[in-house]
Length: 355
Image (cartoon, rainbow, N blue to C red; front, side, top):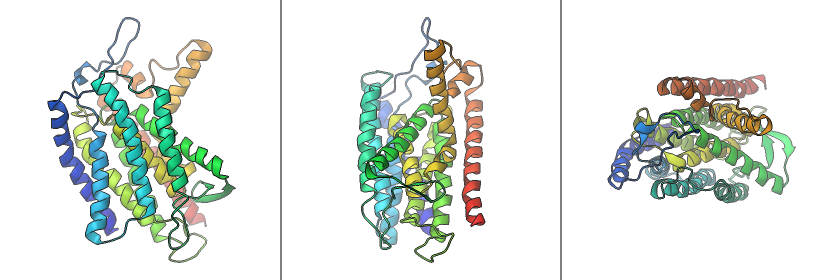
C-alpha cells in the first residue's frame, strides 16, 4: 500500500505543478482549440467564453503518470512489470493518436480534428498491438498480463480464440476511449469521472493483491498478474488526473483535448482487461457508457424517424440547452458516475463474500 500512496502522490504533484507550466507554454504560442459557435439553423451551447483556452493538456496527465510510476520504482528499487509497462504503452500510444487530432484542431483550426476513420485506424493499431503483447511475458507464476477468457468479476469459462480476443480487446478500448472523448465537453466533467474510475481500480487491484493466488490457493483467490503494479498505475492515473482537474474545473484554464481523453479511456479499458473485470466495465465507466448511448440514440432516432431524442447530443449538452448551469450538470453527472461505480464495487465484493 505504501508504494501505491507514493506513486499517486508523485503523479499528483507532477501534474499539479506541470499543468500551469504547460498552460503558459501553450498560451504564449496561442495554441488554443477551435470552439464551435452557433450559426443560422445550427445551434450550439454558448461556449464563446472558452475561446482562447489552451488545449492538449492531456500531456500533463501522461507525464504525471509516467513520472509517478517510474520514480516510485526507482526510489524503492523495485523492478517494473509487463502489466505496468503495457498499460503505459496503451496510454501513450492512444495519447499520440489524440495529439494528432489536437494538432489539427489547434494549428489548422479545424474543430472536428482528425477524420473519424483515421482516428479509428490509429486506435485499432494501438489496441491490436496491446492485445497481442498482453498475452506475452508470463510472470513467475506463469500468468500473462491478460488471458483469452472473457471476464466479469474474474475469468469465466468462455475462452476466445486469438482472433476474437484481439477484436474483443479492440472493442473494449475503442468503446471506452470514445466514451471518455464524448464526455469531455464541459469543464472538468470527464476529468472528474475518470478519477472515480481510477480510484475504483485502485481498490480492486489492492484487494486482488491481498487475495492473490500467488500467496495462497483458495476458492476466493484472484489469478491476476502483477496486481500491485496495477494498483500503482491506477493511483498514478487518479493522482495525475486529480492534479489536472485543479486547472480544468470551471472555468477551465486548459482543456485536456483528445490527447488526454483517449489516453485516459485507454488506461481504464486496459485496467479492466488486466484486473479481469471486463464485463464490470459498463459500471466502472458508467457515465461514459451513458454518454455514448445518448449519441447512439440521437443519431439512430434521427436516421430512422427524422426526429431527435434530445435537444443536442451528447447528453450533457441537452441539459445545457435546457438552461442548466454548467457546474450543476458536471456535479450531478459526477454523482451518477459515483453511483455506477458504487454498484460495480458492491458486485465485486459480494462475489468474493459469496464464495
